[in-house]
Length: 322
Image (cartoon, rainbow, N blue to C red; front, side, top):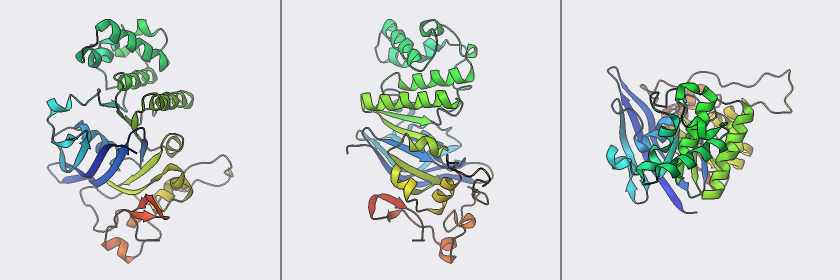
């Protein structure tokens, strides 16, 4: 498969008066053309920061790219200035943000905000508004041509999320970073949006980085899954392999916490005991060791690296246990 984006040893820190927060701790992965990668993990695991930092969409300062490379079309995105990155944002790499309530400018109409990127690329205003209306219809906004004239405050939270998805898709980018884009939607609309993004992938060969805490969504969406914990990738595998043969205790814990259709209603869902480490005081060994029931002495002293598991070169896990 053709490599489209290659992340090498990415590190992101946040400098505060009290301490340095180690949000992302040297992660590496490759995104191929037409591939969907799911990045999963609990809140604070580094999912969103690792992806948004590729386009420097984190607040800097206090955020800081502490190391690594993000190689795309011969350029290291992390070395580019904010002005240089404008050539990539939207046109090459689109973003669907998580929070639709704060992501729009309240004094501009939805139409102006949707078409701004296209018009800046030389598309006529008439054609830009035609495409914007078409996309609004696809994502389920009634009377789309009329709604382009409205302001964000006239849309509900769910409707704003749909508009946000349309905004991320409008320039037909090569890569879409989707930061939990269906969180605010009910399950029916969530399924529609997932189908929409999958159709876009099939039609245009778009590659997708789908950030989520919902392993159920990942099962039907991703080709490959990265499991993050405390700023590290602890397991990486093709989606089917991850669900049938998980290796890392954290991955197993996440999967056991998922309800299934044949669960006995008398049984409680499993939970992972304990809390993630404080990111300003990272442990010496495996960051999951204090919560792991199978941890041995070595786990508390040395942090394992990703290694091939189950004889599959595409399945790797960072764990000292076999």
